[in-house]
Image 1: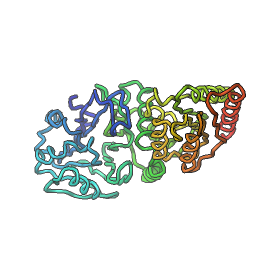
Image 2 (image 1 turned 90 degrees about the horizontal axis):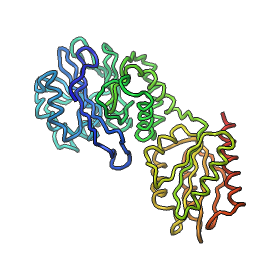
Image 3 (image 1 turned 180 degrees about the vertical axis):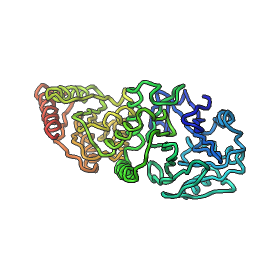
Image 4 (image 1 turned 45 degrees about the horizontal axis):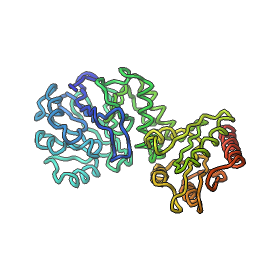
Length: 399
């Protein structure tokens, strides 16, 4: 992708990775590809904000050359050191040998640990620090644990642009740059998926940071993240969405997530969903064997109820469910309603294992579990229906 002007003398010079399908190892399926966004500001001083993944250095430098000779860059700002944003670091240090680099102290430490080199000129910065580059003064805002300790935002008040790195991103490859150039519904779906899978564990930190930003009255027309599309038409709306998501505001939605061996737990899940539907609540069944974890986490982001089921195998959950519930625990989902269900042959360990994880989740209200031996009979299926109905009724009455 070529350099694209996003505002006068401000350019997007990043990379589109059309074929990337796994992110963060295999924890995130990126069905629409990935971008590694980087931005260039031409003023009295030329500033490069954020880098790209290793392997794209040549294309990255070619994009920069469409605007300026890379060796003439005066300042490089590193908002975040994760390798998808810093992989080109060694090449940029070499090519931009006269540039001064800016980032947090944690960024400096992490870059050296990753690459074993540092630029000859480095300035560690924090919130309220700023640099004048001519007509513009760039301001730095610490955002530790959004989502790494080194993270920060860079803000240009003259352009009304917030360079937010991993904040407000989406994994959405396109031959366009702006949010209003693609399908809005798909864009916001990908933004929700991104938040749920990347930033959900840090919701309380993010909520506090959004509140602090609102108090400083930042005037934002454009949000330029390091993944996906640049927000210009919908910048206010994505800010509102982040406020909602980080505040744990949920809908009358219920996810039923299960793994089954001989279809008994699946039969239970379907009957539980019938009970949920009888109360008019929205619900969706996810078989972990066929549904991607990335999509499931996106769905539960704003679901009031989350129900887990598994057949028992060797006195514990089936393996995909075992991995999922511990992944779920790491997401730090709070203040939901839940219960466990499942079938067993001669020991019901799966339900107990799920319940132990749920008991460790902050603010969870647990409803009675259902554990059934072998295949459920009509009476037991009725029990599943009633459990789903009572659960949905509680969800719908807690508005």
